[in-house]
Image (tube, rainbow, N blue to C red; front, top):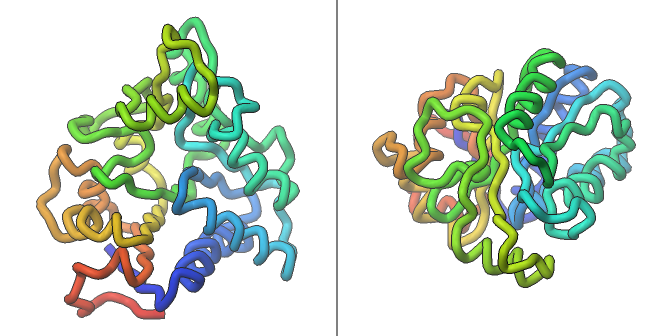
Length: 250
């Protein structure tokens, strides 16, 4: 695994965004998986700025969200659909037909999982999967304990997130919130991966994922096995990684 250390939070966002922009420039019909959350909001803003300053062709790019909250409206500002639409698809003028997202409502999510996987496969598979990391090491909604051979599925919502989503979305107490997510096997089948982490709260889990044993209890640790995975860290997230040998400073 290649590790790149940014010198500041601002450089972190720029470096991470540059990996997405570089893929689009290099392969104008690439398929790119994106994540949402606190980490990627800044990265997406930097990507939009790169595009504004030096526009590149996005007419043939396919982008997809790797996960989605179920049983909330797509118009809810916390939905992955809404965030990616506002932060990436619209600013980069990506055609809507090239924006793939899991559904938020369905009578048969198992079927929807198969349909979503097939849609990505029909476009040639994933050229770049961009990832954030949860404080417990989760990737997407693949929580600790998720088997490494998991494919697209409907995961549980962790308790804190469930409470927040219900509060912010006004969801009914009876609504069963979940996390539609590509599985760990899907992630590992991507031709290249970028894992981005920033902030002091990520330092411990970054150390465990990159230096600890490979275990389903830390889902992100499986990335140690991917032949083309780069991790980009800001100074706070890299605080516990003191050995910089064979690793890259920009």
